Length: 272
Image (tube, rainbow, N blue to C red; front, side, top):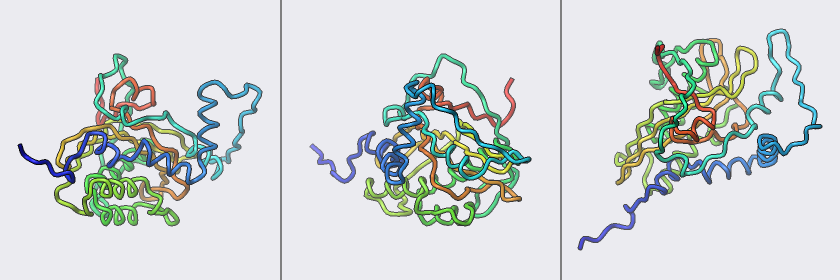
């Protein structure tokens, strides 16, 4: 009987937790940043337990339709559908046809080989976020992730609070691998998206849903959601500064749970 090496015994759940870190790791981040209260209030409202007498906050806009930083922080803090590791695993496709969102293809290659050239629209912000996220996770390298962030984040944005950087760090910690380890193989494809909110033409809270395949001894595939504040720099979309948004739901693409979470089917060209 062959003896299995304990260091290479990886269960599906361990791999899921290691790469995405959504179920427990993101919750830790939220609580640490003081989002627990905002999360609870939003959840109560979603469940219909909020008092009907509570007045709705009014956010006055200027002539360009911009409501300002407090409004943007409120959008970022709003909790999304809570997901678990089970929701990330392959699941039956929903019987309901998913909504679709049209994302243009990139027109050029930008700094650190990240595709760019997306239009000045909310959908363009989604496309740019998708390109940044795919490039970062496919590398599974903190060194490259830092280069991406330096090139694609606005001044004042903090790499140490970036969910993708923390996920890569958590992955290597749990997998017992090192940065740039060639035994690690990750492939990500954007398959869904949603626009959580926007403030005027130059700021969008964009979210992308990825189909992720990771290999570290074992092969595992799962759904992963990620949101960012995105700002138009004048030349293109970049990651905006600000407290990280509430975690996106990580669900298996096109499952009923995914549709419940608000994910739309990502398409790169018109489909009849």
